[in-house]
Image: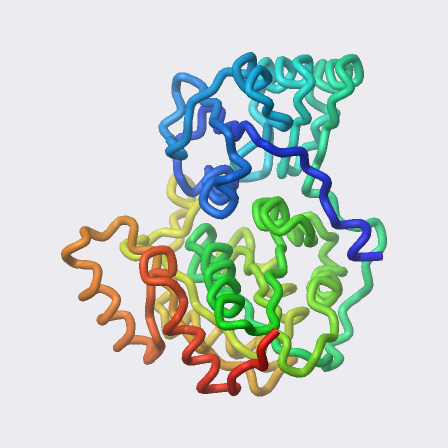
Length: 351
């Protein structure tokens, strides 16, 4: 049931829609698609106030249709998952032109004024990625076969998805049996399947995480995309559900260098990011409730805000602080972390 309900049928190529987004942290859906599936992303569409550039061709809807684009994918994930009214005209125009409209928002596309009628008239599809299966089990905490790694973070949008994808790619390069398990809208678009954990009713969070990563061969690795942060005042619930349901053998801590205040709290009641060691201790405490052998195997740092000349010193500082192999997976790759996994758990047999 899980596999059939969560396989997406997205028509490529895509026009990535950034609207009027101002911060890269909120543009992670579109930027992630461009990073991991560049061959599927034909262009980007931005409103005049948009400050994000995905580095691909700017393309109006008429040109996108003329060049064979099949879907407009909303590449923004703002707090609360709302679709601003300022985007409505573009979405309706895309549907009228026959483009499927793909959204990872909480709000449903059919609720956008005039959009459903536009899609019906042209034959376009409205695809809401953030729809979990209608039936999910309650988590049991029962052990299951196979090996699992979960990416956890000091905050939201610090690179958990990118870290998991980098580790999966490196394991696959080495011939290991491995799957990337998506838990958020961008990851699901990249992988083609998964469960949007933040849309699951709270009682079923850990059960959904168990369903994402079922029993497997003893040396098969599932690399599970993390969500939120245990210390975040808004998103701790989804993080804990994933941690318990994943029953991770291995954990990788993800962090953005130079970020001190948790995302989304800046203009409200600012919450400082906990220290790395506090974050590790908090995650281990809960991980070991369901898997007493759970341990950290690496530290992933987003160094995009660090000058290149200072990057190595920053990574070395974090390595000393955590005692873990420390990399920026986008720049350095995940080889050092996978080396540590092989050291801790033994190398995986070739696929």
